[in-house]
Image (spheres, helix red, strand yellow):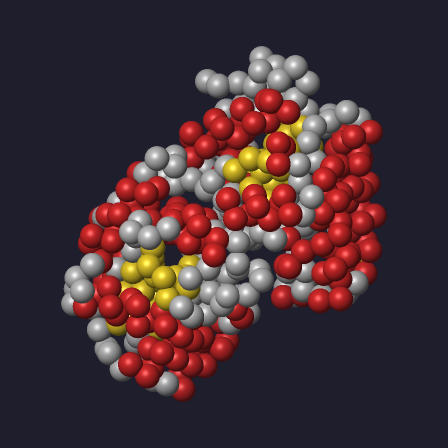
Length: 404
């Protein structure tokens, strides 16, 4: 088994400002859980970022510790620590600044991490300062243009400044694609201290036998075509436009299967009822991650109809790699990050806007291109195994550690 150059297992502290247990699994879950299986100790300091959508008791959340947590990898063993915070606008950030700093200090004292990996903005800034004080390497892992995700527009400029400071100060800045790497350099990261580690796939998880069971469960016939989307239903996901286009086309062969939940759930349910699309738009909330490959296999074409906004410009969602690993063609809006990552003729087909995604999918169907484009997609990602990417990530950590 590959170990770090220290010749021993290490302790990794992860800090982020999103919910480790609710979102994902993202790059972070796959890598950290695999490292834990290899014997490294992983602790995550996280935050209940969507607290407004939850009905929780109490004005002040209490500190929580979740032991032996895993989401992506059977046998993964991650300890998740959620510091207390105040459930109120603005005060949530103020309380986070205090409680997360105290928690990071506590973890440095008790856990004594060999390395700290940051995925957030505010707590990453605290972690960098404390890491420097204690001579601990800090790795900044970028999967989004983080400041754009801050919901309060007035705070985004401050968040951008802090994010930029983090990139300048980190020992290494890792991005999941070239578009985001270029973004980190523009934000102040030293190009010599940047690296791209892409998302991975588990080709063995996609068994054709899972297809029929899901289609039968929802009454989908062999001569019908399923467009599939999974993930958080953001307002800018483009699913509203696809649903409305589905109503206008009236082609009963086409069904839309959505797996996930989020802001657009009620809107999409309303479109189903008002447009008589209950049989053609199938909506399912989250299922266990191990069941997700069956849903992808049940599809004929997977879609990413996102709006071309600042948030989506440079990112490549991990689900796109999973769609491709299942051998499914992907129809997406022509986002710069996607086009830079996959180019042309690799199983990803582009529409000019969310409104045109359905038309592009129908074109793939009518041209008989589902099979050929799906093969191109799988061929593109087949070398991106999670185990190999975990090796690369582990080696990157090793290089940044004393004696590495």
